[in-house]
Image: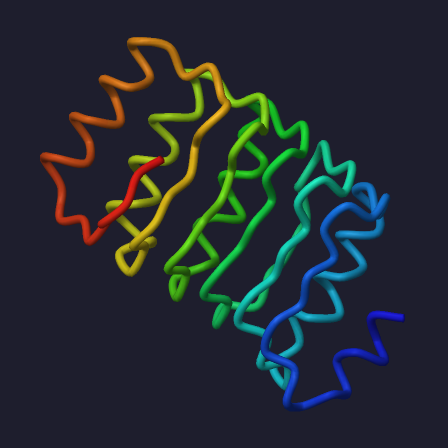
Length: 150
């Protein structure tokens, strides 16, 4: 199915939220849409049963990514994905079971690669006091274009 969608050159936005794609389905999606010919700018895979993002390769021109309501947890694997998304302007990670451990990784990604990010949604996660402090310290001490933090 994803291979067919890639052949639509005008496709810029794809919403697959609330589908039971699971890890393997999203991985196949990423492999298809990671091709150079793909012009996809917005991808929504919220509530798709994703738990592991190791090996996901999103297209580097992606501007908006919503992976909310997936159980990503504190695995460092999803952080690797962030370093490939230099054009990203909106990242939604609400209700992903993230904790304070992920905050340092987010700050590092924001300061080194996600310099175009305008909106970051971390609502519904248990970041704790130390996690929020890490975010605050990182966002105020680094060159960051973030305009909206949820």
